[in-house]
Every structure is written in C-alpha cells, then in structure tokens.
Image (cartoon, rainbow, N blue to C red):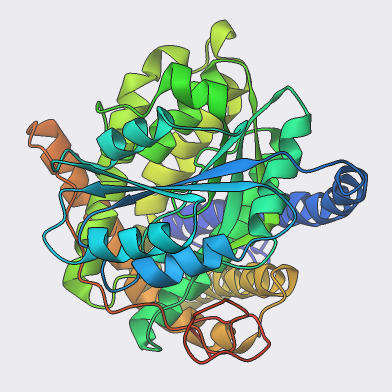
Length: 424
C-alpha cells in the first residue's frame, strides 16, 4: 500500500511534521485562551468600573534618563480618576535627571525626588517602597510613558484581596526601523496572545517594569531582590509563590523605548535571558511540587519549555527543513508553510486584539529569518555564560527618546489621536 501523498516519506520529515503539529496545537490553544480572555476582561472591566479606584504610588527608578524622564513624568501626572503619588529615585545619575525631576517636584506636590549613590534598579525601587502612601504601587520605567487611564485600569484590580500584582500592556515606541518593527510585532504577540492566555490559566510569569502594579504591602514585605538581574520577574514569581494571583490588564498601556541597534538588543536580551535562568534556578524547588501550586505546575514549566527550550530550537527546525528541500521537498515544504501560516495567523490575531494595524504582518518572514535565530543565539550564549558562572550586569542602553506618532500622551512627540506602533 503506497504512502499517502500528504504524509512524510522520511524520518526527518515525520519529526518536522510532529513538531509543527505540536506548535499548531499550542497556537490554537493560545488563540482560544486569548479570545476567551477578551470576553472575560470585558465582563471584569464592567464590574470593576462600578467601584472606586484606590490611590496609587508610581515608582520611577532613574539612572541617566535626562532624555525621556520629562515625558515619563508628564504622562504619569496627567493620569485621572485616582489619587497619585510619584516617587522618582535618582540612582546616582551623572546627567540632568535629578534636576529635571526636581523641577517637576517644585511645581507639583505629588512628586517626591529621592537620591542615592548608584546601587542598581532593585535598590532604587526598594528605597521608593519605604515612602509608599497608597495601597497600590506601580513601577514605571524612566524610558516609558503611560497612556491616559493606565493607572486606574491597573489599580482597580486590587479591590480583590487575592490579587497581588497586575501586568500592563507594554508597546514599542521607538524610531521606525526594521529592527524596531520586528520588536513591535514580537511585543504584540507576547502581550496580546501569551499574556492573555497566561492570565486565563493564572500563570502570568512577568509583571514588567514599564507598567506593573503591585499590592504595596507585598512590596514592603517581599521587596525587590538583588539575587537576579530581572527584578521584575523575580518579584512576580515571589508574589505568586506567596499565594497571590497575578493578572494582565490590556487596557493599561505603557509605551517604551526599544533598543535601536543590534548591540543594544543583544545586551538587553542577554540580560533578560540570563535573569530568567537565575529566577528558574532560584525557584526550582517549586517546579512540579505540591507547594508550588499553579506557579509550580503551570508558570515555571511553561517558561522552561517554551521560553528556554523550544524558544531556542526554532532555527534548528528551519535548518532541518532546508536540508530536506533538496531531496524531499514535500516533506519540508508542507511543515514550513504550515508553520509560517500559523505564525502569521497568531500575529494577526494579536494585532487585532490590540487594535493595531495589520501592516506589521508584512515583516513576519523577516522576523522569522532574523529575530528568531538572533534570540536563539542569545540563548546559547546565555547557557555558556551561566554554566561558566560569569555574571551579566545591568547594561545601560543608549537613549534616543520616545517616538510616538499619534499617541494621546501629554508632552509626547508628534501627537494626534491614534494608538502608535513601530510599524507606523
């Protein structure tokens, strides 16, 4: 009996088909959960909108941020619907960061400026935590800007005493280049697909520094850790380990400045990946354990499988498919087309859920051919660095300022009335 034409004729072809099938199942589940989250979120928002919004303290750790700190402060101080306190911690800056922040403090009593010798972001945020006046603490990076309504959208979740942290929707707002457009698409899928799906499963792994809200009492008790260089992920996992829920709020938008060159992107991703290794090592005792709960059975295994294992295996799939093209084109072409079609469909769903233009879909092939191998190479180098016990430090990335075409942000550049994205 002959082999059906749509089935592989080689062992490698079968392996590719199985891998693509597993990725397809993951994509279907992710999209399904994300769509379900959109419906759940609308119901949740209607319920929370009827409740008063608790006050929030915004914590901004700043080191040599004179390029963007003013836009960050304007966007925070323009928030409405709740009481706001702003704490800027100047972490030993050598530029005009502290002076610019002090000018805002002189004009607005809600702003408090603290200064310390350079001790790192965790140290600066822990200093801010000693001066919290409100029940909700929100971390905002000094290279980011909040859209109107973001603080209220985050703070309203804390009426539920089980909620310990809430992640906002972080979007790229840098100069329009091929590199920033690829990052924009990557962020969109990560936020609108992965974060929504994680929220539905109760398995959000990172509350980002660009827009993350925490219960103030937990910040004071758990504090930001110096054990890892991804202090936001470390604190998120610590809060989940303490038995609190971590949510994702898509209506809380923060626009952040992305790396604008390959060297800066490499340094950023190496820090992210190395910090993830550190967090996984720190909390390995909770992996698949009874005391770990959803964190141990869902969050950490997801990071390990998709973030660290399969996340770095993508280029191996492409190389194997290309190797088959010369002699068994059918075995390679079908999995490749199915995989690419799945990626485009997931990206399209993410952009639509985020109410963004579908134009970034045009760079999906470029992103696949460049960014995915780039991230995989970072993962390999991180493994080598981690195994050799070499330290990776917080590296200050060069700042060029936020580029917000059409962004409704007070003080931002080139305003009009539409949600911006790097693909504009």
